[in-house]
Length: 169
Image (cartoon, rainbow, N blue to C red; front, side):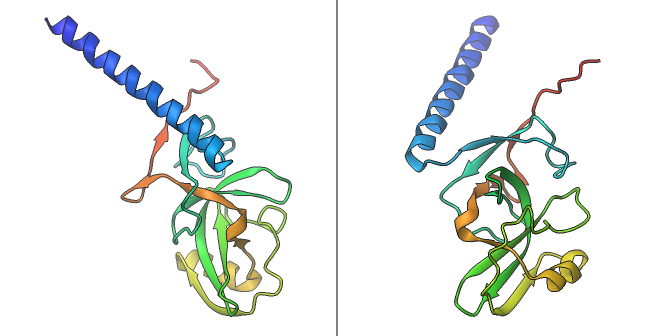
């Protein structure tokens, strides 16, 4: 009796996973944006490690301070970093300043697409005082058009699927 219940639970989980993967795949075609991303690199450690999988909300292109986002850099690569500042321009545009949790400095110009030219700064909102000086020195950021979406979070905790390490032992 317990074995049958266990098999039914496992079957239910597998069916739910298959349905979720189908929905993610279909929505990727609808939005023409990635819906899941596999982490590569150490810039977001200890939160995210190489091989972890995150779910992207492509409809949320207006991130808030502290949220983890996915954006396209100037060489067409996807980058997963945290929003550490938001710059309000006098023309109504917002620029998003990003940084990896494990990086000592905000994203440099070659990572953060340099489209800040023409932004007359109205106000700057920073996540914490640790990055404030860097932000005020550079005043550069990403326009909303380069943001693919916000990584799915529940109560400020990033939802992720732990990746498998290529090292065994």
